Length: 374
Image 1 (spheres, helix red, strand yellow):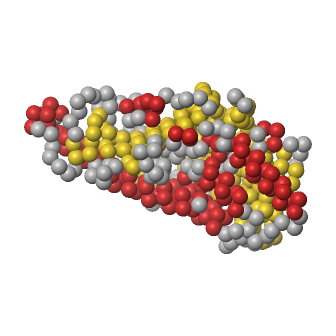
Image 2: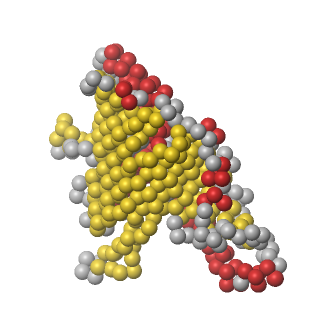
Image 3: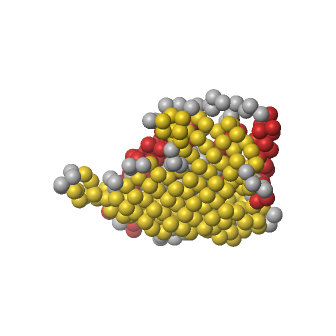
């Protein structure tokens, strides 16, 4: 499943790294482009604080992995002015099972619960993979974990599939749009503008973006096409279609629905459909949501602090006066170890090791994906 998503990552990379070779032939189109991009930024940046829940459906179908469909539940709270961001996600996923298809000699897949919880503050990031025995605390500035896939609500409607997987911020996406040279920037309805650019490479990629001025310059549709290798002058049907609807709340336009679909013909199709329920907009957020205690994890879940470079378990959810454990340094006194139970202590250290290795893998995977979106 993930392997085929990488196909699109590399396709998207060519669009990001190669500047379009065509320039405006009409200065009026350049003015339209600047007018629209300025409007997008000004209106999206009006949203600085908020809380929402989003519910929907994830669909996935692959000739290799099979078919998957299930519910998605998201909770998000943010204060961009203070550098605070909280994102919880639960959705269906797949993993290789121990069973094999002996006829085809390939792995079988089974459905699992994916997701977890994620907090970003100016001093740290906290992440908890669904079903894990521990949450990790890392330095601020680390890429968001791949298993959470948090997204910026201000960038809804502008996401490619690769951007959505990487959790690319609105600022990064807007910067990419501003760097492009557009083939056209025209009015395409009473209040709708259409921007179009093409990135030249081994495979040419076309972006078509529709923006509704009356809805706060909100992106309402994005289509991404690849050139037909057999007929270079022609474009294939869209590989990605991104659609969004918007509502006005507290003089701010916020997403109401979001649907993105990716099709890699002959390989897979993926769809995300979300509906948003906004609980607050541009009002202070509860500070406890951005703490490890505010994650509301199962009692006994460990908190592993790795900000110093030496993983140290600094507590456990729902437990007071929890002694610290670490891979380096002394263990707690014998009486404390006895109260916890030695098997638990051994299991804890194993968890720390596994999480450390897993964290490094996720970090480099996320870093590579983000590099593709820069």
